[in-house]
Image (cartoon, rainbow, N blue to C red; front, side):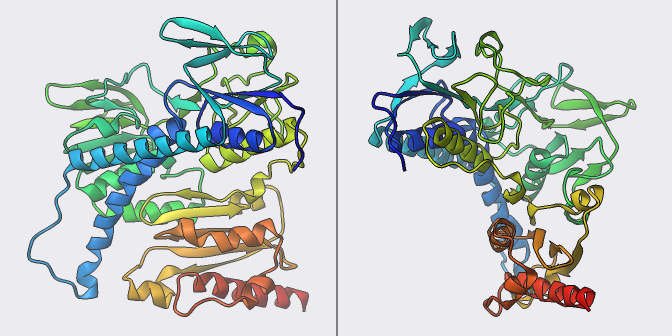
Length: 468
């Protein structure tokens, strides 16, 4: 690790994962660091997005697990579990606040200066912070990192009111479970919340403008999940585009593009996010933005202005907290002269927190086909795994992709806690291991990860067959 020039000043706009991870790296490299954050340390990821949503989903997961109890010989005469949504949301927000406080305490221990307010660039080295009607200019910055994140996209014909028409940041203000929740949007956010609220006990209608839920994900995984949703009583309306949403006397009415009207008690608008880049002075100082408003960056997080970097959802590279954090760390290593490795999106592991979860890493099958890359593949149903049988798990699979010469190119895991199971495949992809390497490694018997080893052994046989 290389020490930087004494007194070098780094200003970070945004205290989310991209911002606070960058601040920690910059401090360890010896820079003086100022973080400007208007909402709270951790940003939207901690306060209104990742931490709250995954905490809510974890609560719903317990109810999903309980559904399997009769199959395991467990009987209860007390009836189905009841959800106190007010108590659930109180816990959700308390955990988010605690995580935010932990991040603040850590930054303060490391000597990071924290300034409350909204920052904007007046030049590439001059940042002005607005708070409580006052503007304060910070000391000249040698490096600026923009990590301001994104906010939920809304529709002009479905304006959120925080009561019946909601974005995902407003769900935690509800004190009672929605009787009938209409979810508009079948991407990751829509699918996660639709599945969670169905498990919690709400009637759920999922409105999807595409042929299936999760249109950008592995086709087999998406079809399996949609089947699970339907089997649990969710109404999935495919090829149905929402045109508007309005309040009624006791709920909401969502009008579809073909004129049909869907009625419910609440509607969640989950149609993507927009970057929080307006009003920051970026274009005025020469920072290029895409037509969608995202900051243009290269693989070491540089913008088009020397000394100005960007990380996280405001860049549109990949909307994951882990990617934001890595972008921030890379930016500081590059800016402050430390060893740096450009961002490698091909090794990013991602997870969708539905039940079952869907985790992916490396090449998808669609990418392999579209790029004309040679590959072999195998899919092992979770129901064949002995550990899964013991736990009453039926829905899911492990799918691996490899080059015909054996190098692991990617994988998909659909299972409870797939987010944990994807890690060995991630290691294989990141380190260019072969299916022989994976197949020859020990797995515990019985274990869910045993299916990964078994899948590698199947592919090893295919590779040997092609060699012959």
